[in-house]
Structure formats: C-alpha cells, structure tokens
Image (tube, rainbow, N blue to C red):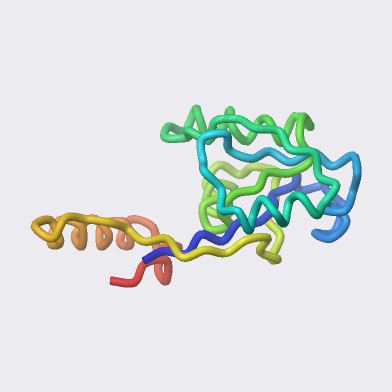
Length: 142
C-alpha cells in the first residue's frame, strides 16, 4: 500500500496561504488530464473558485520533470495539485523554486497490485526503491 496525499505546489515566492489559494477566483491550478480523479476530490474542487488547467503528468525523465515544473515556475499556473511526497522529492532533487503546502487537499490509500507468482519480485522492487531513496520509507507497507 502507498498513500496518495494530494496537495498544492505553488512557487517558492508565493505569499498565499493554502486557504487563500483555493479560495482565490483568479487562482489557476494544474491537474493531470491522464488521471481519473475520485468523485470526492472533484466535488471538493467544485466547491472552490479555482480555475483548472489540465496537462499530461507523464514525467519519467529528468527533462520531462523539468518541463512539467516549468509550467508552474513560468507563472502559467498558480499551483499544481500533485502527490506531496513525489513533489517534495522532485523539488529537492532539481532545486526547483517551489514548495508544498503541509495541508492535504485529498488523501487516498493506493494499492500496489502484483500477481501472486510475482510476490517476491514485487517485494524486491519495493526494497530497491527504499534503498535508493530513503525519503520513501513509510510510503510502502509490505
């Protein structure tokens, strides 16, 4: 299992609080066009004044990650709704001038699926992830 804790990521020089960001009429937030968001998350958005912009969150290479964060850093959006753990790692790794709010907009448990014949392989992959990046400790429950 893993946690999907979505929060807003504004630029580092942002002066709005979490509440101000989601209450601002002119606030523009980037979300993924590729995800199927849960209904309860979409209903939370419907209660805000946030304008939504969608883009692909396909960010496998360093170049794609940098292009993705450039949307925020160039000022085209005021924030990104994204997983807090991943965003914190990318901000630190690439030294982006961005920050994450501590408040979580939406939380959901994510189940990592694997075929029972591949339990050992799945467990070993998780262990490699944990060894590679200590920030992932606590992210998985085996």
